[in-house]
Length: 164
Image (tube, rainbow, N blue to C red; front, side, top):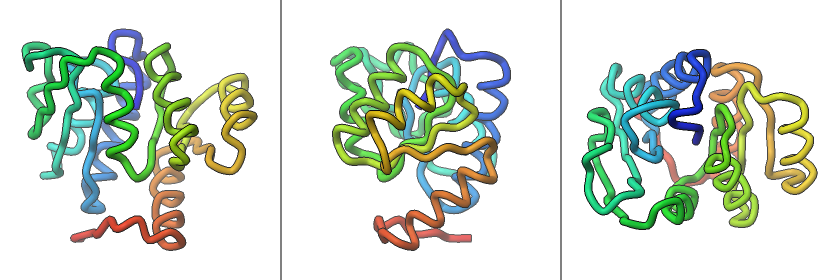
């Protein structure tokens, strides 16, 4: 999860790397499905290595969707679609921050989902750890994210399989 138009070039580059790494482990990349920002970059990275991508779109059509979203879920729900994204995910990885992204993190915490904050500033980390306690983890890079996902899945057996 991450911002669209407010994503930085660094966010987009890391999102691309993250999408590749997730797909290489046989996991599915699910984003907000739009054609820019972290959403598009993560899906592009996953597609680059043959991964499966899902975009949960805010509009009632797929006009602004990423060409890298293989499965497009058209909701017509605007930002309320964030709940669908969260509930459809086993683990939420958050890169970059904007209002919509913050709402996704809050929904994930409220839904008892594991959240990994990637490359976030100390204020953001403190805030979400304060409200999310043990559900919120922190990673500084993509390798740490993958390690944390593997570790979490090994303990919780979230039902994800790999095909390496």
